Amino acid sequence: MVVGLSGGVDSSVAAWMLKEQGYDVTGLFMRNWNDTTGLLQSDCHWEDDLMFAEMVAKKLKIPFYQIDLSIPYRMRVVDYMFAEYEKGRTPNPDVLCNREIKFDSFAEEARKLGGDFVATGHYCIKEEIHTGEDTVYRLLAGKDKNKDQSYFLCQVNQEQLATALFPIGSLTKPEVREIAQKLGLATAHRKDSQGICFVGKVHLPTFLQQKLEAKQGNIIEIKDIKLYPDIADGVPDIVIQDCLLAELTEPFKYEPFLGETIGTHNGAHFFTIGQRKGMNVGGHKEALFVISTDVTENIIYVGEGQAHPGLNRKGMFIRENEIHWIRTDLRMNQGECRDYMVRIRYRQPLQQARLYCREKGMYIVFDKLQRGIAPGQFAAWYDGDELIGSGVIDK
Image (cartoon, rainbow, N blue to C red; front, side):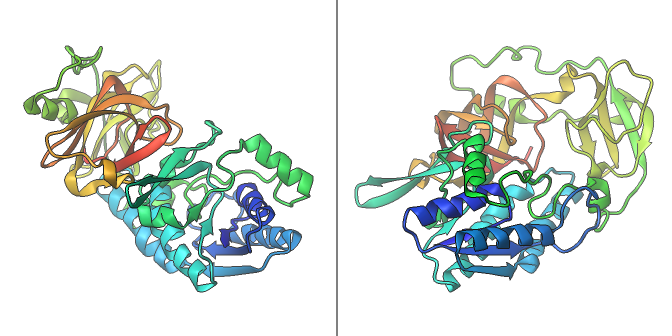
């Protein structure tokens, strides 16, 4: 059994729990990032994480190793992130890190050490059920709803889940810290990591300028625009015709003549929908929010106030090749529609929606208007506490 020791309290307690359960536990630390460009000075670097991981392994009396996965991490996570931002999309590198690194490259290294299973400190729960002769693995939300991390695992597959363990999924964060304190673990009171997975908290424009060029463009304010006038209060409980699906999920196309130029920015690809910081434009009673970006013309469109209709959308679309089913046995067929609870970002409360599976992909229509839907984000759909599938928002 190999535990990914990150130098944090969650993986530390996970290792202890598995040892208590009788597993032959080995700790493995992965170093994934070396560059400090754009990092905020208050953040600890990987050397600190390694030191704490070693201290925990020594305290628990388990073997400890470290591995450098910075090359696959850059190629499979960070390069993808740069490419998405360049297209004007908003990726989630933490989701990619779990799919491509923790439960792929890292799991492969764990097997080299003789680890049949890989354990992490994620707040989620894995269950095993049997359908006929097949074994199916369910991924459920963690007990602590404030820390549930199932969303970050929305792209893992059945093969990866088969060898994954999440020991602390049935605990709350305070319970985890209490255990660590009683054990005298060095990580008991260490702050949770923030920012990009294994990179840290960054000043995003500075970080992105490693690959993306700064280029001045216009900020255009949009006023007095009314979207979805007839459906803002919900979709009738009937199956929507395909022609209306496209209309409900198509983002509004803004043009410069619809608004007024109120300032300049240093690159549309540095901004995301719903963002309120970094524009440096005054003279408004309420804050300005990004409601759309155009990386081709290098324009960002903004609206004043949290109630601006441009922040809200009724639905979204996921291309067929971007749809991922954790529960492959529940895969939807073309022409089928199904109700699920959906979230488009970590910690967002689950939202009631109807999914329509069509030849081109998945249309998702929400009961209520949703704020800040951005292409590149991951939408994840749940049945109760179980994560069923996910996909990259195309538009």
